[in-house]
Length: 630
Ligand code: CUV
Ligand code: SF4
Image 1 (cartoon, rainbow, N blue to C red):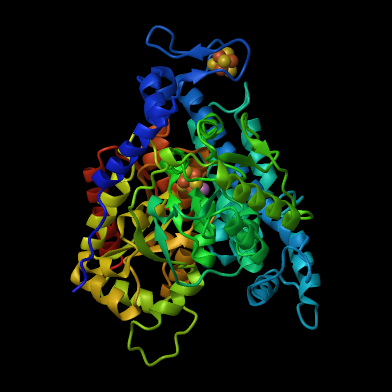
Image 2 (cartoon, helix red, strand yellow):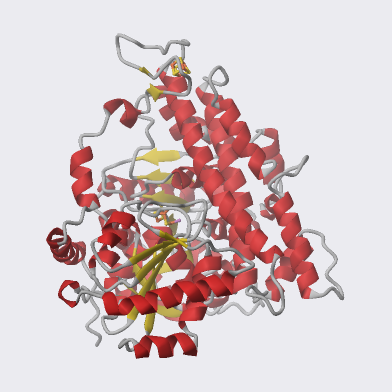
């Protein structure tokens, strides 16, 4: 039999420690060192009770000073901070979605960006009531992209994608004032609501937080996902590898980092160009290897099988290998530390977007019009940099695992069709998956998402939770850095089925899938929303009745809070392993963990003890099963 074995967190850490030794040699700084300098964190900040939104402050809440100068109490301050945090995340995801709409708007049959999945474009067009008959596919692309862009500033009405919800849910959300209007409006309105002298009532601050999150999940992020599929192809199962061992000492290594596939796809295209490969050979390399970090890595892994060098807290590690010719970034989750760090090595740190400019980087502005020219220039810069490597600093930890990725909703529906012996033609529905769940072969599903955070021993929460869940016959859909943690550990190797309970193991065998399904990047959590909407429609249940929960055990970004808000507002209980700075207000805690349930039938659970977190999830899934009598 196979000698398959998971990679342990201890092995990850040993590899990191070896790299930090190289770092020490060249005087490099690291997040591990900076965490020490920043701890203990400011108690006011940690509890969310510091307010500096007007110039009478900053005000800090203590027993002696229970109100700010304007009279705002801890609940209002925590609530406003929470809403602003959400708005930051929703704006960020949504702006990414807008860029994708813009790229689609500029697609041309002979241009840098083309329509790779015309069928999906036609499906979306029909959904949006656009006449498709006899229309040129590029005319249609431009028309639909324009409509997508209009979703950001529409004068009246709600997000179009809400029509994907089960019957009645959109109307209910409208009634509750949780249905998102124009995407930009929800972000603006959130900043307005949280301005000095506006809302200080926790209920309203939470309500607007959910609504703003919904503009992200069912607006900007969903546009990002859907139109990325149209442009670059809808993911299908594909083999890849994960962890630093995917970098190759004999090759030019280019690492893509950030979020927007418009950049990473082009870098991948040009790395395959014969002229560039010849150039690489001429400088003494064997070839060019592209690997990725963070969500852009998920994007190119899902569509092209490009290997994943690592997740969020490994971004410095790729430079510390001494074998990274260029780390090419666009937006979000990029450590400013990469500038000074790359200066300790030969690595070129290439920034490409005016949204994310950083000291000590080379800025090569990237846009749809000049995409090929710029991508070629970046690849060339990396290749020519190979000769500047310092061989004595090169060390690539030989750790990697195989992973099967690419489980878009379309792909999941297709593979699970093979599982049931149903005679009925169920192609195109989630019914086979539902059958597995109702029969109890699978107990339920967990959507595992989110980042790493030094507050949690990196990747332990992700991996420990997933191991326990699959052993309990709970299937996992994963995205973002959680998905990369799973891949690095080996949980996306099909052989990981042996770690599952008997039911899930059987499903994995029949469908030929790993027990943890990679659904993509953070914007692709919108895929999970459509999946649960389809499950609800196909079962006749409401989303909040399904034995499905969301979990972000190691999250860190504003985007993650925006996501949490739309996952809860959509109807799924959401379990967090890191507190979103609400410890300073019992009322905010009440609203997030209980109060919202009266609106959405779901709520947050915050639990920093990971063992307890997983038990609570399993308990909740079993409660949901009982409530619907399965
Ligand atoms: Ni967008 S938001 S660290 S890359 S998942 Fe990874 Fe995912 Fe969090 Fe960032
Ligand atoms: Fe202080 Fe109120 Fe101004 Fe906040 S808004 S800084 S609590 S005075």
